[in-house]
Amino acid sequence: MTAFTDLTPPVPAFAPVLHHRTEHLGPGEPIAAPLVGASTFAVPGDPALSGAAYQYGRWDSPTWTVLEESLAALEGAPTLAFPSGMAAIAAVLMPLLEAGDRVLLPSDGYGAVRQLADAFLVPRGIRVEHVPTPEVASRDLAGYRMVYLETPSNPGLRVADIAAVAERAHAAGAVVVVDNTTLTPLGQRPLELGADVVVSSDTKAVNGHSDALGGHVSTRDEAVLERVRRWRTLVGGIPGAHESWLIHRGLETLEVRFARMCASAQALAELFAGQVGAGRPVGAVAYPGLPDHPDRDVVARQMTAHGPLIGVTFADEATAERFIGAMRWMVPATSFGGTHTSAERRARWGDDVAPGFVRVAVGCEPTAELVAETRRALAGLGG
Ligand SMILES: *Cc1c(COP(=O)(O)O)cnc(C)c1O
Image 1 (cartoon, rainbow, N blue to C red):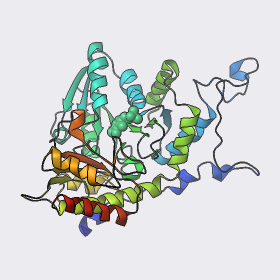
Image 2 (tube, rainbow, N blue to C red; image 1 turned 30 degrees about the horizontal axis):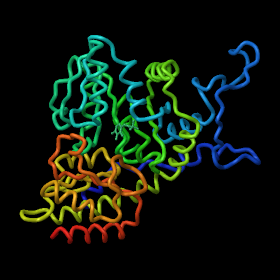
Image 3 (cartoon, rainbow, N blue to C red; image 1 turned 180 degrees about the vertical axis):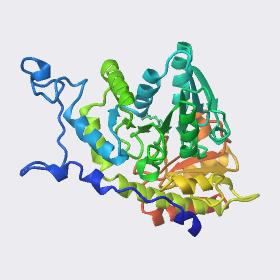
């Protein structure tokens, strides 16, 4: 394990994200970002000469600015906010792809992205190819317009080598998009590894309180940024002021929450891994921080944290449900990245996993309390 940690790239700075606004405050200005619920703004005369920074709420608004500037500080790249992760992803896929283009999507990635592509890209003449994350490394990328990665994949938690894929994709003339929801920029920095565009569901760890949906797109490519912005302005899929304010507020504690989640996830993954064996309740454990992870070399090179998700394969569906039912500090729910730990059998949504596969999404409970409760619940299963 020591050699493993030694290889980990440096953890990104978070103080500039927290202070992006407060560094420039004048006397008497509020430390907390103001929530501005305006749909329209005073614009005298010629709009271009009016000096009005804000004109109409579908184009831009002060509460987005605060959120987008802090997300930009986190990503190290210009950022646009969206009302959900899917709105952000659609704002990349729809305007950047045209008839005749080929796009590679992970077959083990977020289901709604695959459904969106099949339902709305394929009929527009775009060739959509679904490839399992572990096979992207050996795929010939010639002829693709876009290579889209989600790493670690969810819920299998396989890892794609972003730098290696980006190099080959760029040689083939393809744009590289990475869904970085699971790790956040604190755990992995796709743009620095060579990706062109990052998409994120901020419904998960970035907001982190299970009380708002949101998403963002970050890119240093100005032409891509303007096209995505134009899509948002014309389609009108924009985040509300209140949600933007909540997500900005959640983002301020991301570093503390994420550190806790990852530390607890590592402890739980090791606890589950100690239960694996014939006749035992647990058949397999997938976690990028375990030394036997199939992609451990890439994990060590590209990830600064191992994330809040653990895949635990229980002996069967009944054992999995008994575990979830017995655990006090795990809510039976979907989604992840929130303050409360949750767990669910992914097969109930039709994921291509064993019936006993449970995705544990670790929250912010004290690590020792979560570990003690998990140990108690496993003992009840005969573990
Ligand atoms: C949740 C999620 C999305 C979709 O985000 P919404 O905010 O629900 O629209 C996309 N990608 C990943 C990896 C996710 O976990």
